[in-house]
Figure 1 (cartoon, one colour):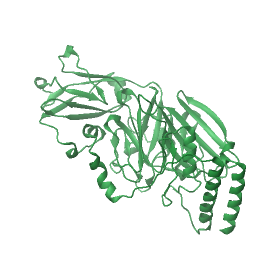
Figure 2 (cartoon, helix red, strand yellow; figure 1 turned 180 degrees about the vertical axis):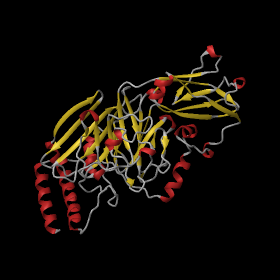
Figure 3 (cartoon, one colour; figure 1 turned 135 degrees about the horizontal axis):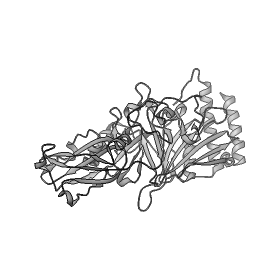
Length: 454
């Protein structure tokens, strides 16, 4: 081990004296879809290869999706191509692997939502995982990234359609993290294959406009990989405001349909089946209107229609055409997905009704889809007494009081440090990181039978 450390130390000193090893990047940029760019960063001297896909999520032609609970355990390309044949599945154009997971049952370590439904075995946040969540309120993409140290669920205003978990926190408020847990299964101090997702700073009149998907090739001759801190610095220099790491190692995979599918080099030599995935769809989507009636107690009883209800569909406020005497609500410009309508009226408990509306439904049934509800006399219970069964019902009761969402987890789970700090001189940082990376490589090389891979 001593010879390894000596050799690595000399190499690090030489690299540090010469300046930043990352100064030699060459780049190749493509634009597979309007609003989507793919840049390959290559440093042959490191060696290192990084793939970065940026997505303009402010575009009306960009839609996001994540894995349904029944579609878990697929390779990235099989999921992107709908190989399992799940009803209503739409092939994605760009995709990246998702959260760390338990191989038995492909259970994500953190929160997982797909098709606006919580996974039954990954239905809550925890103090070791963060999440990236997305929705489309008022037919506009909205995203949010939560740090691992926050124990919280996505807000109702997001009208959540999907979420993937991840750790560790890499960038927060435009500052790279410098403190990592050496016992973390992501092996933050090792040069390794890594996947990450990030967003730019929120706009003055809205949320982030750009999403970053990053895949670092590693554990191979052409690319050794990066430490978590190196990746944090790299993403900060890209202009990322907030970022978390996804599952890495042999799971790191990035897919771009127009460029032949998988564009990076998975370290296993083949794709690994993973728990969940995040996808990007490009193109004009099928739009339709949702209409419905609100019944008092008995569905279908036209003598008991409620005409003073407030109805929202995916966050959009419904209108009540006067031609129907305010008995038939209407919401336009809905796209195929798991659609939920929420209604409330004076003297009645609020209610939510959902149904999966697919492209095939619109093609066969027409551009007007029906979603009626029944309300019952009474008042809504306090939020902390609600028992949501899916994301739409949760939207009716969120946000929960802060103490209710954090106290239980905070009492039992350790808080993971994540310290922001300014970027220091690249040459000095590279010297320190090289020494540290070499040290951990030497430790692994001296360990008999070490087959660790996150």
